[in-house]
Image (cartoon, rainbow, N blue to C red; front, side):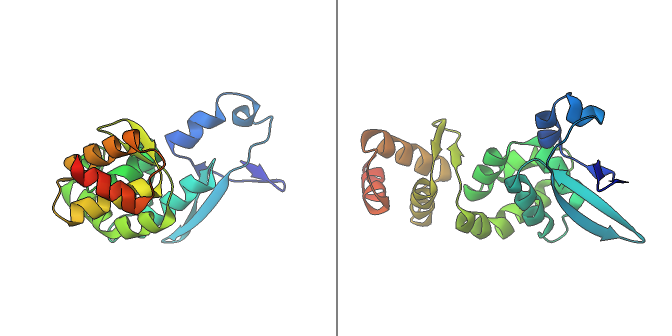
Length: 182
């Protein structure tokens, strides 16, 4: 990438590269906006580029996890859509993360443990795999509440999903109440 007459080499996850396409931005003749992160390692610095601010933020969040570096963070962004990553972390589905190349069982568990609260505070959509429904923070909070009182994660997702379908205008308290019935 060239900026201000200076050429830079950036590492870009597959999710960002696919959005750049094969047009002029990729062939050197056009423009593209990338949000970057600079990491220093040994005597060199590495630049990482992302098409969206959300991708950059997830990259930085993942790099903040103990024992996880930029390489694994890039593998995660390349191996799973952000919404699925967020859902896996928020619903304690470390097994989903284990399927990503370079992420083992312990790393997946650490990601869930260290990022669950952070991603819950960030908000954003959650995709419920059992129901295939996109939900908001209220849904993820309802699922978390049900799992806290003893529901299995899959059970909680299914109950909240059914409650949402039957009562689409329910607030968090009502959603939890209806979900416990199903």
